[in-house]
Length: 325
Image 1 (cartoon, rainbow, N blue to C red):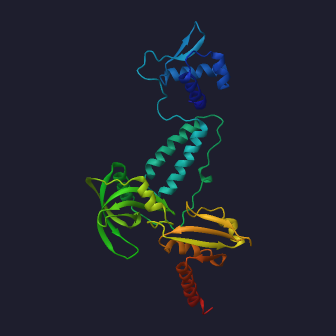
Image 2 (cartoon, rainbow, N blue to C red; image 1 turned 90 degrees about the horizontal axis):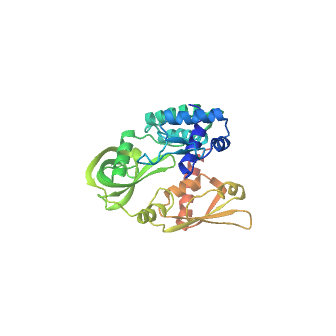
Image 3 (cartoon, rainbow, N blue to C red; image 1 turned 90 degrees about the vertical axis):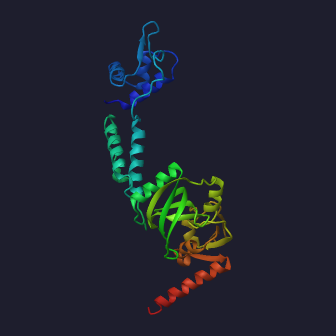
């Protein structure tokens, strides 16, 4: 059926009105001819079972809610053309971000949306290829593990996981109460209460080898406590911020960094010589150190002293590697 936009618009008109609306007024609001108006009304009556009634005395159309248990709504999934296009774009982006998770389900929904969009006359073809996500350093993970994590999260159930930590290369088995699934730098992490350690922890989903749903209900941590623990420090590392990194970026690099948000509580200022100073709260310096080093000589670490020394050690180690050149 063509004229999806007009069906959607007429439905909103009739749903929100308390009095009948004339046929001429419908034509004006839908910007259509009388013949098109009649085809739309007939289609809605016959195919969508819309309770559209014509009142001869008041010369207008209205929804008859007197003989219905609930206000009438269009059946199924109804969007106007612009909303369909936007939703299709979002589905395409989701398919790229998820890395295969629910790929078949997303494809089915996308196919249905495309069919609905084709019914809208005058709508330009949506070229999905014009939307692109470039993943960098994303790691492979087991989709069934992810789905089990999501199931436990939504149902507030505990999990038993087998975990292989990169930090110390150790394997462990532990029960956890999932709190949040986090997409960070193209990879998924599970924020959870670890019953083995009695602490909040973050687990890289790609390092979870096995997962089993437990019957026990998960321990739910207050949102404020989660925010304080996971979002106060820099990057993926949790815990209260104990240090403040002060970084001076060159005037050239500042054109990029000044527009970036490294941390919700960052502070910044422009220096008299054109450099840009960025101050960032952090707890564990490892991830911050990697981000500093990628800017090379375009950034100077001012404080704290141990972070300055960590950069010096890395520079010295690189000098030893490349000294033969």
